[in-house]
Length: 217
Image 1 (spheres, helix red, strand yellow):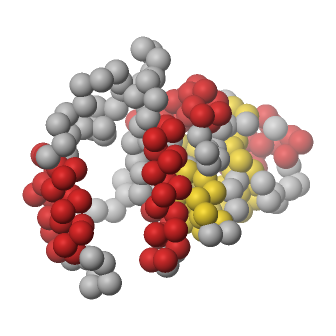
Image 2: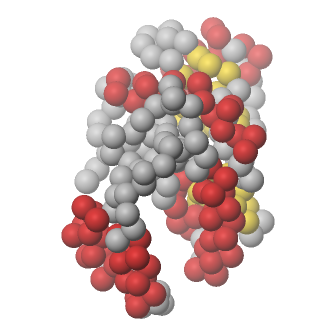
């Protein structure tokens, strides 16, 4: 399934205009389009910053979630997250809010070797344990994530069967069946990432450096 089409044209000229009118001190640092995902287009500004703009109307609440909540979550975590440094407003023909965030050096986990992934597994576990703290009553609730895994069984099995031979299939099956059969959570609602996959994990110097893309909290 391909990513949905953007509902507004986002290019370097637009981002340059937004920066010039709202954050002129950042003009001249250099601007490079990095790419886009389902929800946002990403541009790098200089060496340390990124601009994050929603591609679709339905992605606007995700930007606002990050702007409101990440500064509260970040102090409790053992790796960096992209707490917005500045909030952008509609302008230059762009109709929605947008953010300026830190840019994290490193590479996404999908490019890592199996040994590197194994090294970072414990760090990711600690990160998630630190993240899964009770959330405020007015925190956003994700209707699709953080749910019991049993309904996903039929979707997950083909993926396990297709894993590379280097993976211990028996271990993966045992792990999946244990997780699938875990009873539904009955405690207080806790924070979750909501979109945790290798493209959202930044590795650097052999460790987990940052976890990005928090709109689905």
